[in-house]
Amino acid sequence: TVELRFLFGDQLNIQHSWFADVNTACLYVMAEMPSELAYVRHHHQKISAFFAAMRAFSADLKAAGHRVLYLDLNQCDGKNTLVEVLHPIIEQYQPESLLFQEVDEFRLQQHIERIQAKAKLNVGIVESEHYFLPKQELSKYFSPGKHKKMEFFYRALRKRFDILMCDGGPEGERWNFDSDNRKKLAKKDIPDIPEPLVFENDVNDIADLLETHKVKTIGAAKSKIDWPVNREQSLRLLHWFCQYCLPNFGRFQDAMTGQSEHSWSLYHSRLSFSLNCKLLSPDEVIKVAIQQYRDREEIDLAQLEGFVRQILGWREFVRGIYWTNMPGYKQSNFLASDRKLPDFFWNANVDMHCLRSALQHALERSYSHHIERLMVIGNYCLLAGIDPDQVDEWYLGVYADAIEWVQLPNTRGMSQFADGGLLATKPYVASGAYMNRMSDHCRSCTFNVKKAAGEGACPLNSLYWYFLETHRERFAKNPRMTMSYKNWDAKSSENQSDILETAQQYLSSLQ
Ligand code: FAD
Image (cartoon, rainbow, N blue to C red; front, top):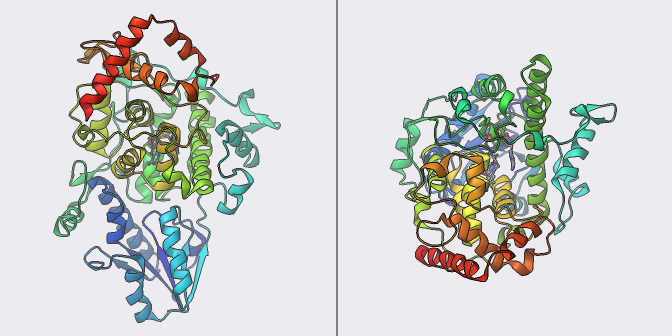
């Protein structure tokens, strides 16, 4: 063996140039490393999905004629770092070089840099060949500590990669269709919600392994998991999504309902795991969606653009924010929030219907859709002033698609405003009125969404006003928040103090 090529669990990119030819002088190494299970407590289904996908990828490589050394958790037992995993392999094979694909997490980059500094062989890093923007070009778009508007970044990428462009302008003559989208689901829409395609991949052997090694996990353990774990399944999910969900993607992107057993996935793609493990490339996902739009009348531009925006816009954008601002980003706490994460985050045992439902989805399926993550769970944490370290830890552990580069900017930045506005232009805070507008949860909730103070009032209401009042100095001058402050200031001082007292009582009951 002349060259070792190491692959992490989120580097399952069969379209990478490494795999274009079979080279018997190369040995591919993959490992179920204990260190990857220990940096945060992961959802049981998240680990199962990663290990199942890694195993399937290794089998595919072998079937294509590549040489692969796959170490399962038993074989990695007692090897607590990447160095400890690699050392005996290097001793055995005496390679001239060790290559990595560029990693997506700061933590892993540090490991590799340590190896580069100490190893007695050549250690190299090649591009991951996955994102639209190569890593070294991020600095053309982002500057450390500087706010960047997603909309302009997205438009620049649309132009640069010639996606949905027409004569130099946006196709349909508009960049943004948000105002046509984001409808609530009416009663008549509920029966049409498609039954989600799930894969029921058997992960019993992985569950046994996790038990043998006493791996500490969160969430429901399942012997069959929903997530696609190989390229064939990922492509199937992509086409299924385009067939059944894309025609309504933008329209119901922000909707929530408790009235359907499919309420956990609605019209969302659930492609995040496949994308983040690189089983699918963002480019091919967008191309397939655009082709479907061109071929099928029932998909209008607003739906397609909404989807393209998430992948070309938001996904590339949060990656830029991450790499430009790490490692300091992980420590940011602009609002000095320090309350402990309530215990019900681990069992969904909470009376608020909206929150219970979103937490149940997360704990039972290792998935909740974007608006549950942002406007239900995230909104609650932000209003309740939960310590962002604890919020991050929960998000990073619970979702199968959670990898730090994408989880951290979304959680700390977009959802908790802990970065002081590097990513968002205002905190995403909402009272019960928002929940009532976008969902049917309030109708069957213990709390009264119309009430802000006293017994039975929806906690989101008092917490919302309390948040505004507490952070008045920071936000009163923000043009996107002046309306909210006007509404607050229009209340009588008696009403205000009732509301603030209700919020304080609620917050002290959390401790
Ligand atoms: P869809 O709604 O179908 O969207 C299509 C794709 O667009 C997604 O698969 C994803 O790749 C991309 N996308 C959409 N929104 C975003 C976004 N804000 N940032 C990056 N990509 C986006 N996404 C993760 O992949 N991993 C995470 O750990 C993660 N944590 C989040 C935490 C919070 C607090 C919030 C508000 C969002 C988080 N997101 C995360 C972004 C988004 O919620 C998920 O990508 C999405 O819910 C995944 O489900 P889906 O594939 O059905 O997405």
